[in-house]
Picture (cartoon, rainbow, N blue to C red):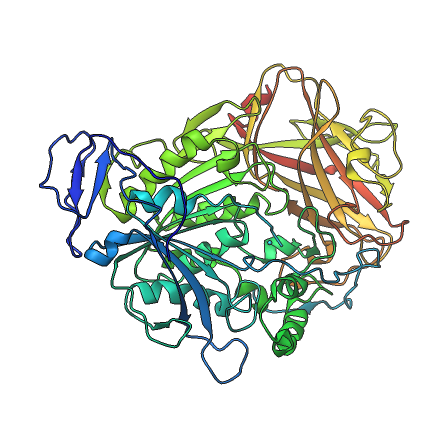
Length: 605
């Protein structure tokens, strides 16, 4: 089967043969020597493979790869559908590496019921309850892999996750069944498992070097993280874009049940239902029920269910290099995912690179194509073809600032970043200021606000100098110089709640010209005051210390801006929305925010 596409015409170039599986010689980035050409060859210029193979003549085939899992429990190993596009020269002895994307979305997404979030919060018994150990991201990724990379001497494999489309099995929202289903394709490409065509004939991948690079956006980028954390042989690199690193942090936050941005009421079970597009979906009814039980929406605690879907804890198994891409304004797959994954990889000396941009849940292909494609080209060439270009000599991090200009960093968070603690100082009319030094509160001046989940956070952030019954605002003076925050802010409040539980939310807001801008935010179930894996029953009107993180960010507050911390209860777009009325009383003297700031405390002086 041939793929129709525009023909690519190439002029003079340096050609390097890859004959019948022969190894590619080491190529210096400034090399101008030529190796004897043959009919099957790649071409390298400026450290990058060039388009020399015809996309019109590319071989397209479909196989069904045998996995090592039986996720639908029918007594047979699941098989996953994989479509392959490769240069026709692979039939003549050329062996090529593979760019591979696994997706649960190829056969669409079903509309399924989600949870009602206009409901009361769950409370736990006073003695507490130990639940054990510790995104529906949709992405319309442009189909450029085959158009761009097949002419450059790559095969592209586009596969369909377990329980979706023509693949067997059941979706399980990121656990070992989906991981094994994804890994099976890499195993087949390296001769460790079998694949068959539609007629049942075994098909071998004798056209590949076995070197595999995975990529994708959202769920399609999450599966590369998951498989890399198994240490599978043959996976040389991954490029996760807007990808989940722990499913707990997609649907929960510090014990609170939290929605992905734009998908209130979604959880792990109805995510699986939405992508369950295989024939006879009723075969997965028990699997879906087990997801509902395991996700423990009642307490929101981190448990064994979530541990199986947490890839950061297995970062020590990663053998592939990692090129992370994430939007600093992504509220679907929130920024904690890239931050925690980046840190875990660094702690295990994994070769890595990162782009952080000002977009949301998106790929750089949509807004920086002219730089993205050559960078991706060089990255895959380096790790899959062993072409010695300069991609690993470049700065480790590219970051886009608020004015859309791009800058480079040696790593992330930014060099010279340390914590600056800003203490709450109460004002007589509610709210108050943020101070570098603790403020004595000899008369124990408490402040309170009342929950009303129907009021959106964007409204509660307005008019910071005015009293508002449903929030408290603490502000810095106008900044005397630019201040760069880089990392994860943390809020700590000493507070009591007049009932057994409530939501806790904090916003970090920039006040300056124009409308206030919510830079980042964070949430907590106060019953998880000790840890995210254990809920503890609270005594109404008793004071506790509550500490929780906000979503990581990299943001420059400009001279003249004011930083504001807005403390509220329910966050309309993200948290459960109970009936109004919960009263939260804060002791400002023992409350603060810890900001990761370049220059630390000195930046504010």
